[in-house]
Length: 268
Image 1 (cartoon, one colour):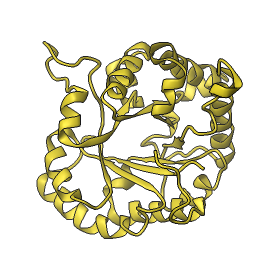
Image 2 (tube, rainbow, N blue to C red):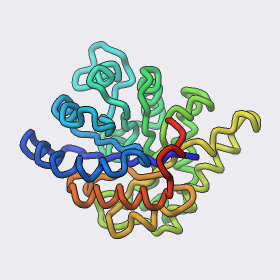
Image 3 (cartoon, rainbow, N blue to C red):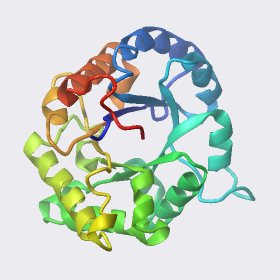
């Protein structure tokens, strides 16, 4: 059984005061679900120390929003996975749509970042998804599959199991538009099917164990419908993760949709 995971991506938001206030309100809500759902928050890099200390021993994980493909060197502005490991991070986002579209990260660069994170024993969260134009021209499957294939080519098929895949349609991020449950279900099924089809042999098929989560304007009002889909194993939450009540409600919806009781989950 795949244990659901919910990750809050704060993007470039926050301050020392605002982070403190958010966590004071958020942590009591998240503690209700930490046994049945893997929970994490990804603050901006300058606040990793602060948020790590606020998380303490709650069982809620710390994550980062990106990592360099390199261990060290003359890469001004980059942060290595080694540094994030020292900070206490467990999850690292790679290939978020904003990194791909605003900063030109290619599939190959994202795959190299995935490798760097995985090599440190951290969990890379591979973000994949299509633009509105790509969806309207029926390229969703080819775009998403090429993004996943680049990682398979970089780290090998079996190593993909060390990560999480997050489907985030670019056209539904921060736009107020949300993919319908039917659209989400089709893409998630296709991702799992693509991975199964790429298994070198049946005994190496990792598709059923791989966690595939959804990110794209998830809100308390639509979370339960999205998380109730068979191939959706959680969410990557942007704007709603900055509001304690909303993120707590979304966590509750995921726990409810999973129907997992304490002690039934595999360890990931």
